[in-house]
Image (cartoon, rainbow, N blue to C red):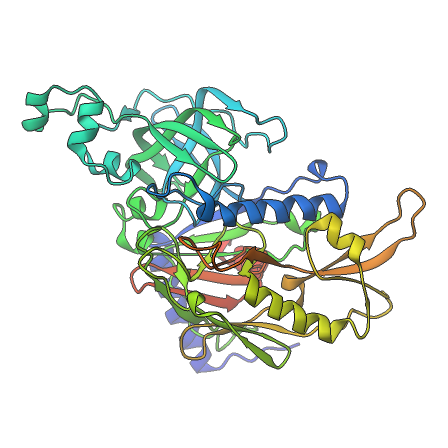
Length: 487
């Protein structure tokens, strides 16, 4: 095939190349995200799906049942995607952490490290950190210390740190370190201390005085978290000290994998500070972003919440309940766009309506796989003949805003695999809807009304524009995007 390059296209590419050089050298950081799925952890697809669906539900429901209601805590960790960077100077250590847009703190295991009740958990991604000689404790009278302690006043924190009263009054407590902080998650917790050290990203960009949590003891949490949510201690917020462009905008593009081990190993690009491409007038891929506004959440300010107007199954539009369109002053409602939850969680009323419509269209052709539903935690599931692909209706998410609809690729909401074949049972093709019931609206009071999971985000570049307070979605070939940005 011969591709004709017109003068207009040539000029376009010259301008884009010049602009790209400027961005890549001064305002863009590219980091590979690695999927944490290990086939050795799961013996069957049922085991994989059951574990993943249970973790998604635990993470989502944590906010609505936490005992310490006055404390804002992040979503439970256990993200599917990890990133790496180095800490320390001149001696440095490479650290691998979960990417989490539902948390506002970077914390990691430090040596000596003890994880209680971690026998069944994912093993640590990197050795516990040995603090370098350049690491320093964050003082009690600092905004970072206050942020880690849910905005507790610095004078109170310095009193806890045993700074004398006259020193507190004279603001002379710099030699007294910030007291240990406590973080609780859905199925675990940790105690940590704040430190500062130099952080270096894969492109050799260095951030001096980077603040992070150092934990020597955790409960059920063997892997640390790189918080990307709103908040002054998140990784994007701290990158703003180097470049506002880096901290005010980031995106990721999760490679479509459908739990295939070969595709899971491919890196997914995490892009810091990159502005979206104009529509590619000369290439093969048309990139067009759909944006929706972020909603402020007074109780959980680190969340990226958006309004969901409804979900279409085929041509039928099912309106979302009112609490998904806004967030009230108690922090209830909205849909959280979350990198750390695998499957999308919906309130029971919306979930039931979507499932009823989906089942009405699919059950005419295929038999319900009730035993598979019980063993995976997903519903509805169907047996079907592999001679032809299962006939399932399209699913579209309608976000708040003008023409802010996102059509999900089939593989993002309908997972197909082989059931049986062990113990003499017959092998059968089965497919399951990859949306989950998050519970009644009454149960969800005080927290998110829904969560958009990373499985449904596969094959999209998802942009978080913190300056304009918008979230954007564009269909992308994420593997190709990684190759083009890496080259």
